[in-house]
Image 1: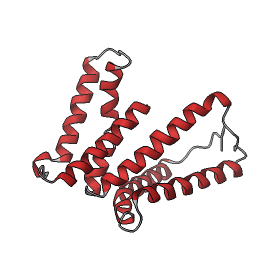
Image 2: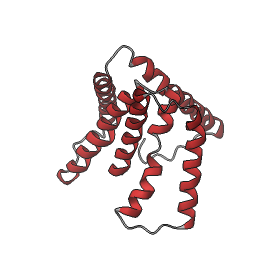
Image 3: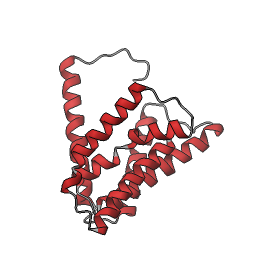
Length: 175
């Protein structure tokens, strides 16, 4: 469908959006259940293998399957190993100790880590709008995370939450 000018009706677009929200919303609880049967590393390997086979099949059927250019391999490998594999395995281990709702919030704090990293590493200027967006993001995570309802004495819970934050930060470094 590359190069196609086909557009969706607003109703079809809204339906697809609702389906995406539903599927993404049940993703973390389903993964939590799956981890009751499959160890984190094997679960990540299974997800990545099925995803890769599906993507290869779709690309092949669309006539778009080809190897990346030689100069793109370092990016492809670093994204595959860090952004996909490491993030997924770390997230799955964290999910063993953390509820699925809290895990999803922490795992997707990646954009919040990007701002301090871009200021520190890339020397990007820190503007008021960026600072306001960062503060609102942190406030939103704090409200959803509910630190007052958190058992700060449970080392397993601290470990799981820490792993999820580490995975999000690792993904931000990759970005």
